[in-house]
Length: 195
Image 1 (cartoon, rainbow, N blue to C red):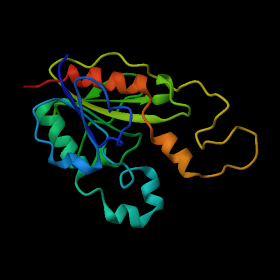
Image 2: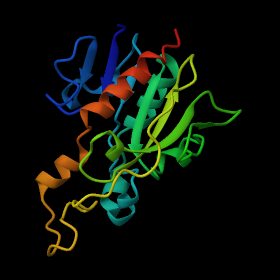
Image 3: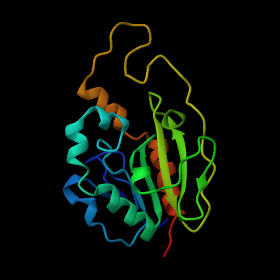
Image 4: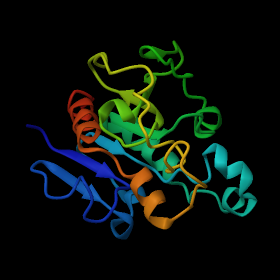
């Protein structure tokens, strides 16, 4: 197995304790990553997400160059970037627009993009996600389409059971990467070695 660097990940989260995965949390500052392994990058999304439009202070603060650094690492070493669907980073960095039923690419860009729903990989709520992949091999087939809609809505409340209560715990659970999706991203990065 080849080594993979997991950038912008939660301290002691799902990328910790794995053989051949080098996790970079906030303390390590993944903007400083300088190779040599391919990456799985989860740059902070608050300033790029659609919700960022509702929070002018978050959008104005920016992301501190995290997405640009993640993109630089993926272009140099191969791997994959993960962001919520409709991330404004795609337009800002002129990345190919994702397809919902396959991988798409542009003649002007070395990467491939797609949209997947993390619920197809075990997330408890529907979580449309955009991926940007760069590697020597074409990317693999993913589980495309919307995940099954269960009792838990995308807002964290039970459908038809009273008002939604926003909690830190819900946000934390919603932002967490399911292990099955983590494994797919790691495998994708391993196939993405460019050097």
